[in-house]
Image (cartoon, rainbow, N blue to C red):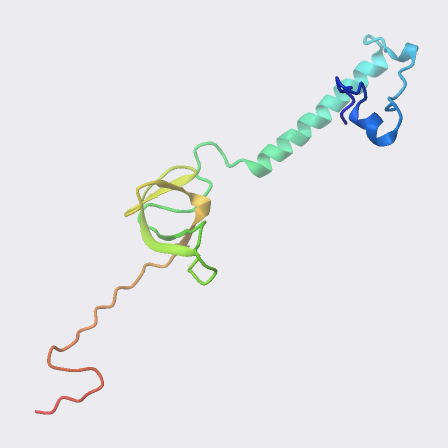
Length: 147
């Protein structure tokens, strides 16, 4: 909380709001502890050990091993890329499909996209099937051809 007095008024924001000076915790004169005290040192060492064990648990659960990608994409996979800005809510949220050509531990490079894309902004899809429809040049849709 701000407790610095203003130059013009000479009052702190707390004094203006509350009408009195801010209460601060009282520090007794004998509050200084002798650091060589064995109980305090044992307590500090135990506290440091607990903090170290928690930090190892957090690192083990959050960071992927060094050198391994944080995603399961491989070169040759097909992905769609998330659109972060859409003109309307009816516009598709994903654009693509694109084929992954390069990858790092956190990003992928897709064919047809000039920039690298963070892997969390992509979604793997099955290989798109391109069906070639053979349309006869003499046939008109909706009409039978009689010869």
